Length: 333
Image (cartoon, rainbow, N blue to C red):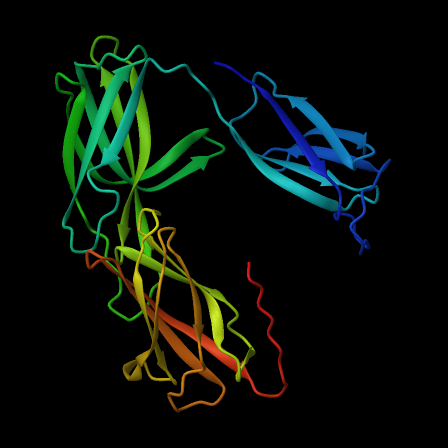
């Protein structure tokens, strides 16, 4: 088992109350405090900021310290908290072999009824673990019990078996994620958490690997970045559209823009645009004339890639400002 130092450096620029200017505070005294999860104070030390406004302190973790979350807190000379951070102390044991796991697909869709997972175990020198038992569980929840010093896990589906001659094991899980049928893009996806436990038959040692499998409402996720409140009514609606596949890779798409006054059944096309190879595109359309409210309009974005994969941003409400005149300036870069 190896233990290390917990260090913390925090710039106190812009931290002290009452400062309006961005000023580096030199020669200021602050106090570091480290507390356990139950609030017990374990470490306290005062330090003076350098000419760059930086303070630092270090704490040697005691050999018998309890595992779990710890809070590092920084206080000013008046005793007020000006910054804090949570860190986790865990035990490190040199593994006997390495376990890797991956799903057959980068992400799954609601129509996919099963999830296929492959687990592989290899010794540190690269040779496969050829004789061993494996247990893969779906973790519905996993919480650290501070008092008992152990994880409490609510397990779902469980699969067990043995490694083959290449140190592999492939298994299928039922895909049980469901999304509401309402026209809503939240949540866009759910990540199912799994844990794979491999026991080497020759040494009876067990190693584990945790991994997530994503189930997405749609294959493409669409995002809008732009002003949504008090948009000048006489100027175009401007912003950026980004399109990504559910695993995070960019998606080059054609995007259809639709608008509705206040009724989800009355959307009609008001423009089109494209996103590039980075999944980004700039939107600029006149205020849609779709009737209904004079104050706001609902926009919907439907993206499709060259293979027909689709993603929808169902609703973004844009409100308008008719009270003032506006000037908009655009640069060439």
